Image 1 (cartoon, rainbow, N blue to C red):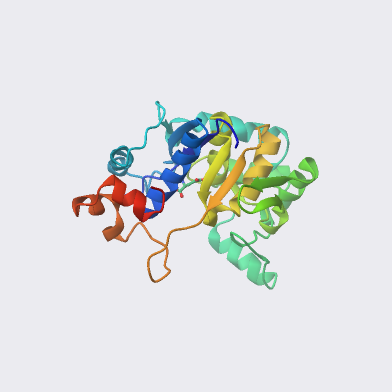
Image 2: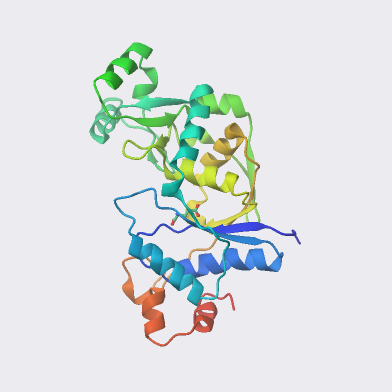
Amino acid sequence: MTSGVVTRFAPSPTGYLHIGHAFSALFAYHKAKITEGRFILRIEDIDRTRCKPEFEDAILEDLSWLGIEWEEPVRRQSAHLDDYDKALDKLTELELIYPCFCTRGDIKAEIERAGGAPHGPEGPVYPGTCRHLSTSEREKKTLEGEPFALRIDSAKATDLTGTLNWFDQQSGQHAVELSAFGDVVLARKDIRTSYHLAVTVDDGLQGVTLITRGKDLADSTNIHRVLQSVLGYEMPTYHHHRILTDNTGKRFAKRDHSITLRALRKNGHSPEDIRRMVGLD
Ligand code: GLU
């Protein structure tokens, strides 16, 4: 057995935790406990329009009710924007990112003009329009105040990293294919970071050694692995776990209020009932 892993649960406070979150949180917690490791709770609140303080309070309350104990202080991504800036500086130095001024409409029009785009795991692959802008075109647009996102130059990043792999405790070894994703956004126009960048920086800085999360996020790991390599973070091990579904096979969503931990608790369920329901008793 691996000894002393560091795991984390990293919810976004955009709603109340439901039974699927309970499974994910307990899964990470158990992995830490059985190895006498450490468990970290991280609040992923970079999206200021969707995240709400009351949901964050509810997350802490619900997890504590479930019997989960985490290390203090809890890291809130919104308080660490400097760390993401530093990572972006490093990526700029390495010439691995470029500003993208395209709107959704521009991208759609460009894809139509080109007669389509390959469909990657995150949707149609960005056609690379802004990758080809000259330095003076970039400067002009920036001076004119055109908002821009920052995208990774996936071809350059792949040249730099060479072949990369990541290992999942359940599904084994995976080879990274960044080209399937294209030049993904690492800093959005509205917030100078993105899920991919923030999660990689945080897991790296917090020394997470076993990343457990739902299978739905397994594709993203390819992007994170590239970022870990270029930013100089240790490679963690992964365990992408099953996604809990209801009895019709549909995954639980934040809008299904009946299966929030609050509703279950109000209906008389105990933390032990929840653990039994998710199969982690
Ligand atoms: N914050 C993400 C979510 O709530 C999870 C991120 C992760 O585990 O990598 O879906």
